[in-house]
Amino acid sequence: MKPAANNKPKTRPRFQRRRFCKFCAEKSDFIDYKDIRLLRYYLTEKGKMMAARMTGTCAKHQRELMKAVKRARNIALLPFIEK
Image 1 (cartoon, rainbow, N blue to C red):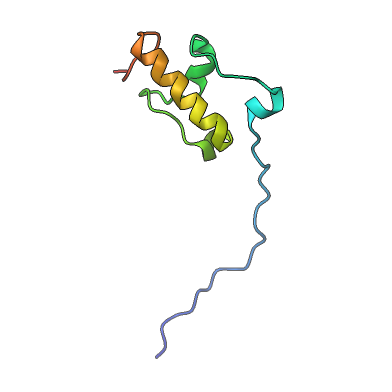
Image 2: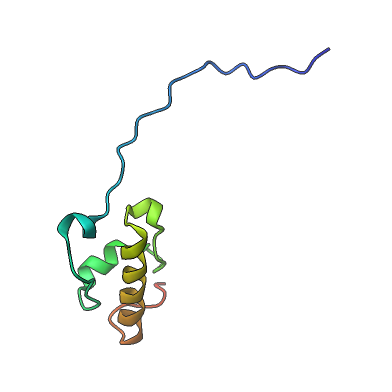
């Protein structure tokens, strides 16, 4: 006997709205490391940086965002980890 074939019904791929870079849309010049409210949006509950595919930021702004978070952590505006 042959093994059972994939019996899943064919479905259409679900439509997902394309995420957009918030910083590109606002045409911001730089990301301020002192803006804690903005930076906390891009961190998880444990204090980790969220991936660009989750937040929708482009590669350029993701790098700037990473630098801003690291600067804020070094001068104790943001915690390295949250317990």
